[in-house]
Amino acid sequence: MQNLTIKGTCEINGTVQVSGSKNAALPILAATVLCHQPVCIQKVPHLKDVTTMLSLLGNMGMTFSIDHKLNVFIEDSTLNLYEAPYDLVKQMRASVLVLGPMLARYGYAKVSLPGGCAIGTRPVDQHLKLLEQLGADICVEDGYIIAKAKKLKGATLTFDKETVTGTENILMAACLAEGQTIIRNAAKEPEVEDLADFLNQMGAKIEGAGTNTIKIQGVSKLNGGAYQVIPDRIEAGTLLIVAVMARGSITLTECQPSHLEHVLDALKQAGADIEVGDTWIKLSMTARPKAISLVTDVYPGIPTDLQAQFIAMNAIADGESKVEETIFENRFMHVSELLRMGADITLDRNIAVIKGVKHLVGAKVMATDLRASAALILAGLCAKGSTQIDRIYHIDRGYANIEEKLCKLGASIQRSPSSHFHTA
Image (tube, rainbow, N blue to C red):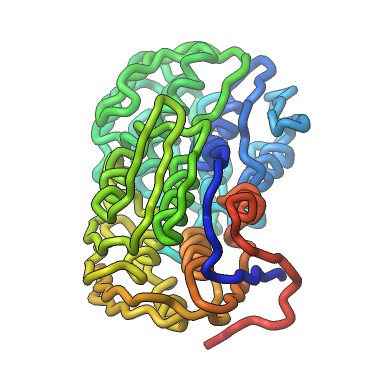
């Protein structure tokens, strides 16, 4: 195990390039199962979750290579093992994304149930319900989803609740289904639209991705080609919040400002001066941020994946704020660690009430999940003294080269082996 040691109150200034999106790359990698020809996925982020997905695909028989620019070349999309085992699925819930494409192309899939995780149960019942409506025969045995179908048939489907991975799984399955599929109450996230753009480039016929109604006309097969993953809007948002908290000035390149409109509006309310271009964002901050209240929501609202970072910002902001979490239960575990650093936060079910303090104080803290890790790094950068964050393997799941990027901007962060864990 490793930890990060952060020296606080550093100046944050400079230019940094945003990595490719983790949440777009994972479903696109899963979708290569559908392709009958070689595929090159460009701008894939260097992350533990990506490595896990590639390990899963390799375990099922796919062959691939990666070049020095982190382009992934899928050389052979023919599987010889139609199973996603528990020991890989337990590492990353997104592994369930192989279910739809594997079933659609090969007529059989055995995928371990992902189970719960630190931020909630996130069940896959919607995935299974809609796959059955496409004609799949599904049962759950010994913790595995076993799905069979000679040929999926298009249908009009409606999700009870918006689900990103559910929409992605059904979208991939419908590409090879016979006839037309209409998905209603579909997730509108940019990552869903990016997956559809990839599939269309490979020969699929999809309309409406990015809206709540998606239409798919089934085709007999998908081809190959090259495709570049969209920028990571959560990484971009995290870096912008760093600059606001540290009263710095940064420019993000190779990003997509249109994916962050509500986030940018919130940061402007906090006092940031922001300029945007087609692929860049420039933010400068000269004063203590103003407290802002917000509610997480599905896209295009404030992402739940930035909730922890906004709470860290409000912890040192001028005034009192409320942050309401509407997407996941149990996503406030970072709060107890921020309290150790001197934050004034009270929890009332799914609402955090934050009274801003002038400064936080460095402490030993423990990361509990991916985005909580980011919040603690942000807090450490703005705290007096030194902060040590244990269990940082979470951060490596979702942020590519986070220390290098922050250090390039002026942060002081050192990674080293952990001697013990904080357990309080």
